[in-house]
Amino acid sequence: MSTLLFLTPPIIACIILAGMLSYFGNHILSRGIIFIDIAVAQIAALGTMIGILIGFAEDSVHAQIVSYIFTILVLGIFAMMRVRKQLLPQEAIIGIFYCIALGMALLLAEKIPGGSNYITKTITGNVLWVTWKSVLSCLLVFVPIFIINLLLEKTLRKITDGEIAGKSMGKTRFYDLIFYITFGIVIVKSVPVMGIFLVFMLLIGPASISRIFVQSWSARIIWSWIIGSIGSMAGIYISYSANISNGPAIVSLIGIATYIAAYAKLYVKRGDEKLITTN
Amino acid sequence: MLSIEFILLPFIGCLLIVLINVYFGLHVIKREIIFIDIALASIAALGSAVGMILFESAHVEHTHGRHGFFPYIFSLCFISLASFSFTLLKHKKIPIPLEAIIGIAYAVATTLIVIILDKGAGGDVHVHDMLIGTILWISGHQLTRLAVVVIIVGVFHIIYRKKFLSLTESFHDHKNKINKHKLWDFLFYFSFGLVVVEAVNIAGILTVFAFLILPASLSVILTGNWLTKLIVGWVAGITASFAGLLFSLRLDVPSAPVIITLLGIILLLGYLLYKLSGYKKQAKEIYGS
Image (cartoon, rainbow over all chains, first blue to last red; front, side, top):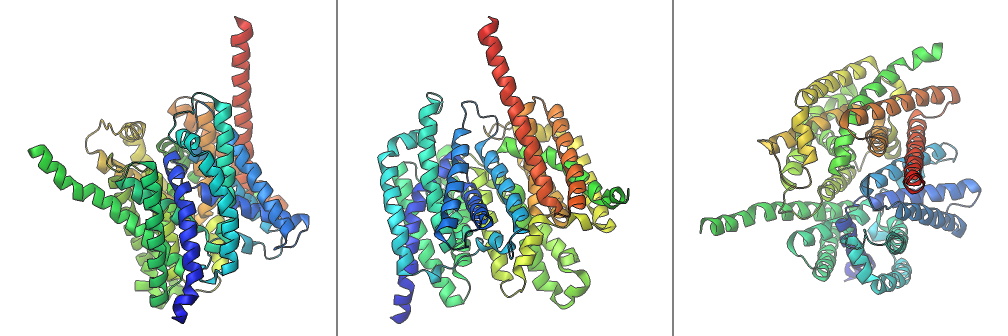
């Protein structure tokens, strides 16, 4: 029983995060901007480094505020760059942002003692260190974000499906701005706790699996949540029994499951279709 | 003059990478699979880690890890497996973008490397090197390998350029006009993987990614047909890498971030130019008539 109790906060954290990310993940997947969360995490890390260079302590509130402001600023620029006739795909713009942010971080790392730590720090996280306190603070941030997104949900859905994009750019940009800022806050909040790859996988993996099999938005979001939660719990169990790090275990499990799902869709259904066509 | 001699080898290395990567960058942007290069680099690294553990653990010190025979073979195997998957899973029955499939492969490969190399010490330094590479210290041997791969892949793509062009042009509407398009798709990814392995070994993941995306983005913004796009991208890439290497030597800063910053500045200038010409055109339309 004691082991179970010890695992409750991480499991609850994974379920909450899987829920929040399943909503954002389905939007991100439909918009085709897969790597935005890795770019946002990198931009936030750069923001923290700028805060440190200005003279704030590493874990101080000030450095965090600098990081948030910087991230929101960059995401604002990104939302404003959406134009009617998209010359460059948005994913390419994300790639450019990521590349320059990482380059800048490497340049700044030379100026901060132990600077290269800040670059690699975000790569791994440890779910098992999650405490009730951080679960609660995540909830405090996620609930308002969830409510804001719930209120704007219909319009955001239309923008993601590409229905409004041509009509009024001002409105689209405004809604996009809110979407990206709330998304950015979720990413900046969760990456230090869970590690960048776990957040990335919970965002993309379950959403991909559910998109492969179901069509409607609500079904996609609910199935992603279920898949994300089950995947995290199974991953934590495997990592606990096989004595490997839990983040990589969950990531590999959900990732491999996505590939299996995609191949299953390709080849298992093919039999049915052949039957139908031959009939 | 000493400095010019000193950066000659790194510059030739950059030149080769720019020549081939601008070409691939245009394809990759058109296909919207921007992060494929980082994914293939991670998958290759996973392959060489597996090869190292299975076969070469006894004499790692001689072969220096990833340059060994088995690690290389394994990384090629892993790349071809990945290319195979990317080819098959781009299908009209799979309603998710290929970039998502690529991203998942990237995440899994990277975390598996973490699991495999968990016990290795000095991981930070390794990650740092993997990201920005050490192009200033490129050896003649590395340069030769890069040149051989770039020339083989380049000639292959020049000969069959029409096939690859039509594949990429029809990438999003599932209407392939050429025969055996799956095979050609596979060859596209695999040949790109070959280049990525050599380039990343020398210049690091981040620099290679920058050479892939930034110059090609500039030429997508500025020009129309493939040939002018290639030339614009080449000029931007070569200028940035020459100036970047020179700066980094004179100012004693790492070369990769300087080159990336310069590429970013060139891209920004190009974007402003594009905006400016757009406004001019608008003004002409309004006031000219």
